[in-house]
Amino acid sequence: FATTPEALANHLALFEIDLREPDFHRLALDHAEGMRAQIHSILDAAVAAGELERCDTARLARAVQVTFNGTLLTWAVHREGAVQAWVADDLDYLLSRAR
Image (cartoon, rainbow, N blue to C red):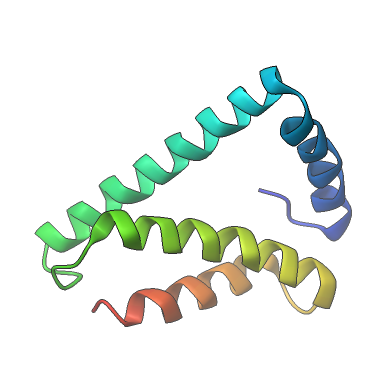
């Protein structure tokens, strides 16, 4: 993922095309669905291993994806610290509710 505000700006410029053009939108949707499926799989494994409480992992996967994307945008505006630290902190906070 983007590790500088400038790189994120470039991703967002291309994202506009993903939202406007049907062929590009299909690719973006496939990517987003694949990412959510991977997150869901990881959460299911964490529940099975006892690392997370039993929960609606499909719903939690959506929340993780939303948190990840929102964190990237918020970090790019604030420009404080490393994006990796922001993502780790926000996901840790979100997942602490399920531990």
